[in-house]
Image 1: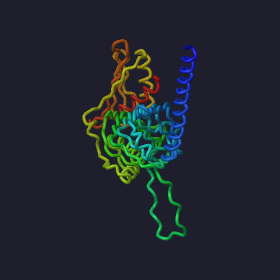
Image 2 (image 1 turned 135 degrees about the vertical axis):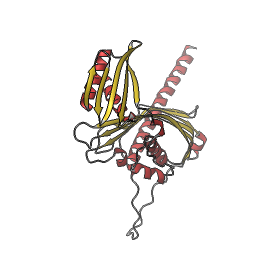
Image 3 (image 1 turned 45 degrees about the vertical axis):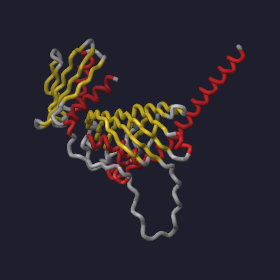
Image 4 (image 1 turned 90 degrees about the horizontal axis):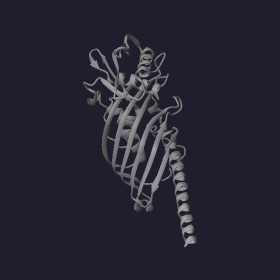
Length: 321
């Protein structure tokens, strides 16, 4: 009986080890393939394939900036869940019944030359027009595995914009999008990537990016809008920190001094006023349930500027990490 239990234990341990090795191998293959397709480094923290459950779970999936930009992440997806059709996979088709992408943060970066990071990705570059005269017939591209997602649910969190084309410190704006959208019948990996890159920008009203053209060419029906209706009338952002009142206040004051001009500073009331990117910013620090809450509002020419308020909060969060 004891020997049988030992054998069963060895088999179970072996299966666990094989499962880990299998996941690590697939993780490496997926990372290399996506990196090659987008033209930028790709990393993921975890990958788990459940064959019996016909599902895949990926955690900490990040696409970093392409060459010519900072080494920060362009896309940070906290979790990806996928329901597989293993029967279709055995027939050479990657069929996902449904997929969920929780996009935590996307960072748009404009470099010193005025170029946008998302437009420098390989997936955003449209192929050149075909030449009329060809000296030699090009080699046929390798056949891609058929791909389809029946239903995609995309949660979009935060869009950060950093502009290094202006002198001095980069101008930072943040849009808290916080929406969930559903799409049906995604028929290529390129279409999926273009959608993930373009939808946060569409929601924030970003115009003129080359990724929109790439998205159109892959079949994603996207029309950029001038103003995101979700932001109309809202000019403030809030966050709660575990740090002390004094620490949060000091960091907030230093950030506003760095980003603009502080016009008033009242520690007793926890109030700071400043001008940032020509917008009037009001920041309030207060103690709430043994924690410290920060409330930031911004207006320019009497109109709400939530992206500027979000940019200030983003810098404060960086300092308090």
